[in-house]
Amino acid sequence: MTAMSLSAVQRPAPSRSTALAVVAGLACALAIGKALPVTMDAVSGALAPLCATAAESSPLDKVEPIGSYALPNVPGKRVTIVRVTYGPGGFSRPHRHAGSVTAYITKGEIRSQLGGGPVETFGVGQSFFEPPGSTHLVSANASATEPAELIAVFVADEGAQLTTLLE
Image (cartoon, rainbow, N blue to C red; front, top):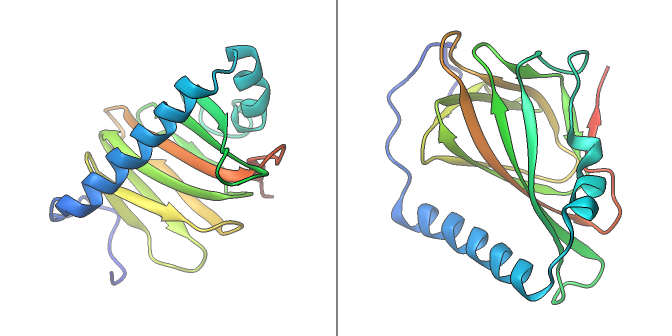
């Protein structure tokens, strides 16, 4: 996609294969969770590095743990699922993640910029991928008046700090 303004743009709906891939990934993560249950205390502990404070993001944002499960078919790896809610005008500071991240927008529109790439806007039903270690320069609600929400699915090494905030 070429560079664009920060205003909303018309984007085509995600392809059927993209939507099915996201649903299949979430279904697999949920199935693994039923096979290998963990307590929410363990999930909260694993997700502590993701939880931002007002100094690290805007004050009305929150990260809610959904689940975190060892991947038995990929020794040493873990899938972690969180719901990220941005209040109106909400944002996260620049950061990077230890593993792969797939984000699926469930409410509103999210502006995102990886590395030196363009700022892109993603709406409900769309997804984007962050390769391991990529710099996430912009992660923000595109609206100053409405909340936005995404589901993030991380695949990272067991015990890895999932999010590192950048200066």
